[in-house]
Amino acid sequence: MTVLSGALLNILDDAGVAVLTLTEGLGPEEFFSSRLTQREVLRQMQVMADTSANVPEEQKQQLIEIDWAGWSLLATQLKLAGSDGREALWFGVNSLVPATLMWLRFYHKTSPDLFAVMP
Image (cartoon, rainbow, N blue to C red):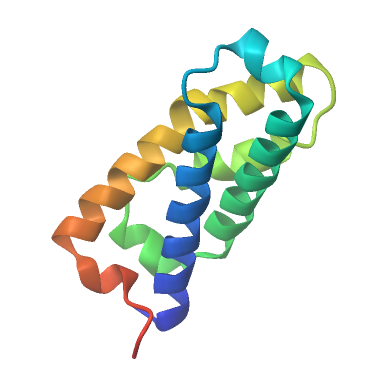
C-alpha cells in the first residue's frame, strides 16, 4: 500500500462522512427541496467518485467488498440532468455511501496499514 493510496482512502472516508452528516434524518422531499444541501452532497459524492477512480487497481483488489464498479457508474449518472440524476444521487446517499463507509471502517480496523499516510 502506498502513501497515496492511504490518503485516497482517507479522502473517501471523509467525504462519505460529510454526505451522511448532511443527509441525516432527511427524506427525499426534504433533501431535494434544499438546494444548498443537495449541491454540497453532490460535490462530496463527486469527490468520492473521483477518488475511487484514482485508487490503484491493486489496492482495489485488497478492498474487494467495496463497490468500485458502482462508484464508476454513479460518477456517470451524477452528471445526468433530470430525474435520472436525482435517482442516482438518492441511491448514492442511501446505499452506496453507507455501504462504502461500512467496508472502510471494517478495513480500517482489520488492516490499518491500508490507511497509512506516512511511509
